Amino acid sequence: MAKNDHEIVAPPDIELQQLVEKTIDVAKKARRNRASLSGLNFYADKLAKLKTDAVVRFRQLNDPSVGDISAMAEMVEVVFAAETDYRRRVELARNLLHELKTKKWRSTQAPVLPEEEGLFPLSLMAKTRRGYLTTVCRQMNGCFGSGWYDAAAVMMRRLLETSIIEAFEAQHLDGKIKNAQGDFFQLSDLISAALAETTWNLSRNTKKALPTLRDVGHISAHARRYTAQKADILKVSQDCRIAIEEFLHLAGLIT
Image 1 (spheres, rainbow, N blue to C red):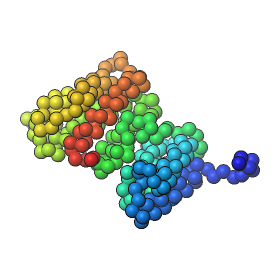
Image 2 (cartoon, helix red, strand yellow):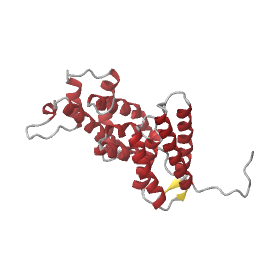
Image 3 (tube, rainbow, N blue to C red):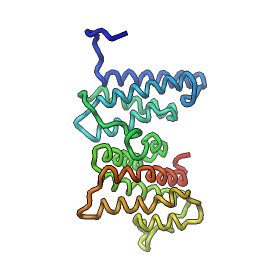
Image 4 (cartoon, one colour):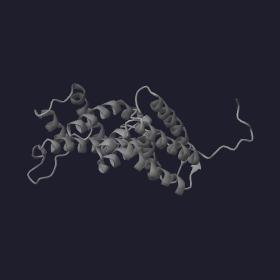
């Protein structure tokens, strides 16, 4: 049945508020009934539908602050993710509702969600409970989504660097990646140390990806006449996901 031409359609920010509230209600009922929000069941299907609608509404929002819209993207992603635990979902939902209710949003085509167009899913990074990692990841995804490809490559380099350090520290091996002054190595030497470390056995894909990721970030940061293009970043996007996720696993930050 077609909508009446005179039917009042709520603004996207109001509709997104309603979707957030419905999602918390679904999560609460699923928890009460000990049902999973992933897989094939009634509650998982409900959440998947709510997430799809939320993505559409989010794309219709824009705010003058790029930082605000990027932070909003992270919250939307985590609130509607199937794997988010209940307490985390409720906490972020409250923050998201606050942002939606207290800012003046205008309808336009905002950047798509990082999980769809970004280089690393924020919902996965949020599991690390490391704010600095999430912030760098959000900036990397935001730069990529905004078409700032050299900046995205530099932030990718920084995220990889930090992830490798996290893995060495978690294994109490950080002495192997510091110089005589106690400062951590830069990325090239970090990668050499990671490849040589016998405590873990890196996957073949990660071993192959590391030199490529090093070079992409290095060229964007230091080559005076080079400017990265979207194709350059897309070419290494899967390598980025594989390598960073593996080091986060080694660090015990995600399972």
